Length: 404
Figure 1 (cartoon, one colour):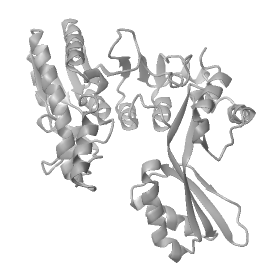
Figure 2 (cartoon, rainbow, N blue to C red):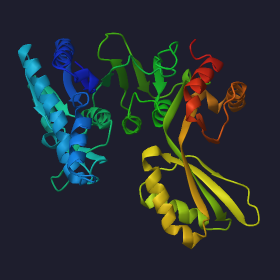
Figure 3 (cartoon, one colour):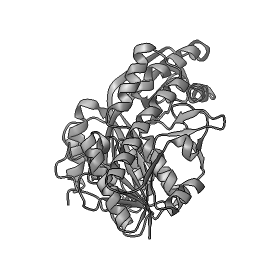
């Protein structure tokens, strides 16, 4: 008998009919002789509705109160699923994050999981119950309710699978698995049957929305196999697992694009030791994530520095830099939020040459100008004008013959 953790996203439980369909799928897994733990997101659109309510009250609501509010969405879905399973003649019990004791730090709205007390869940499973856990939430050491950030239910599912030493963590969503590109942009995109943790981390971090990045990091750390599947079909999906030699034979595994980018350029920066450190240390203290960085060639002791940040943090980053502009002798700050990050990912980049030149040549042939470039061991990313993002994805997908 296997222990299976199943996580269902908001679209999977977006209506009473879909909740009933999930209940049937869960019961079917239980009938196969498996112990089942289910992790649920809030019903589709519910978290956004709750956040909107909060902002009707306050332009800057306290993060503690946001967590109190947002955590209610999952409480609704887990209770409804438990009721639906009862109607099918099976025992089920719904539990919130604090009832399970998913222990986190105290960073409200973006908490990190520290530990999970799995003893009670295992006892309930031994009694034959299906356990349904609210995703996205936990509790800190002071008893305060916390949430894990958007997409946090993926992390809840993987963390529970690790704590319970489950045989597999199945992530059910509204797509059939992980594809070589977004099928909405590239209709001929192919489903990937098996992908490494590192490739999935790069794809998720560079714009693919199938899995939350932190959940993949957790799965890699604790060796949890993730099976990404469709909630609406029975076919096999994509297995996210440790790498093997077969994976390295593929030069490029997928193409992805993120429009959630903004470029900030600091003009007239004195080119001397300590200036870059001063700029980026203060940005770091504000918990703003910096991605690509370019420093121009110095002329007469003056240079320009460009870097990218998430679009929703660009204004915050500019305000931070303005506070030290006089102190550091910065002349001006400009920003551009009409950019996108276009990336190719594949383990095969470690052992194959010429991928960057092939990528740049393909973009040049269709008139796409590259603004910035960054690389990792298994990924190459380019900042381009946002209006060319979908064209860029299609061109690179064809160039690397990923549809085959």
